[in-house]
Image (cartoon, rainbow, N blue to C red; front, side):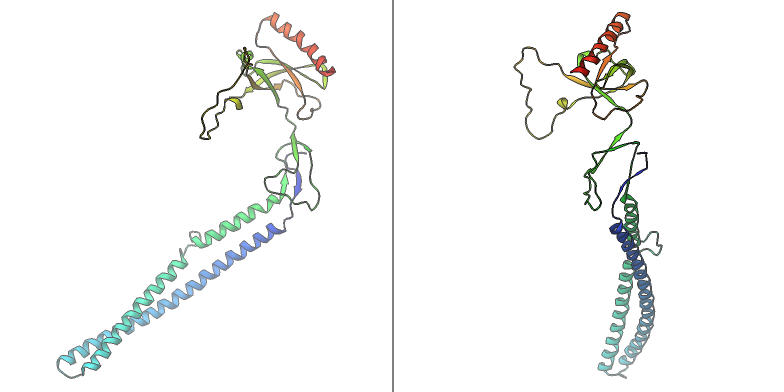
Length: 289
């Protein structure tokens, strides 16, 4: 497989339906805003009428109050006019409250800043983002292994259905920590593989892990538990390093293939010669056994 090749495809129907549903919801929200605009315009027209009526009622009330001081109108007529004036003022207040409520529902007039439209646009963008994800593609060059897919099978999120083995070779070696005292990045090394007896491949150290699980404290609210050992001389701790071949293999070995790594921590000719003599028989020994 090459990077970008299609590995498998999910049934896109549910994702297409979600995109269409999100588009419909967005259009409905736009129509709702248009309806609110019409209601706001109608309410404002009613408000202008109510304000005009309230002004007329105030003029009438003022006239009746002047006539009342001259005993030219009855008290009941004055009370009726006063009630009419109060009713018109209440109508103006109610229409103002109605318009304010409609404006709150409408939100920003700028569609880009309108909260309701932004919510539905986000839902549409998420649906459009998930639709292409129905096609699962290789993120790197490699070979498919442990394939557990058949047409019609139900795939569960966050559950692997195949393994894509990377073509890049990463050689991991565990050494006693005291053996790595003089080891650093680019330290020369030699690698032999169990499947390739007698062949020694020049390599170099690329990195070393910062720690191992044994050095990690679990924060669980419990007291620490010291390591128990009955040995007079305790086992040496092993640390992990990563090694890369100076030249890639002609044919990549399967992931998990066994290898033996010899480090050249010393530049002395005797040490390097002895290390080179040691790695060859080890190669054949691991091949035989």
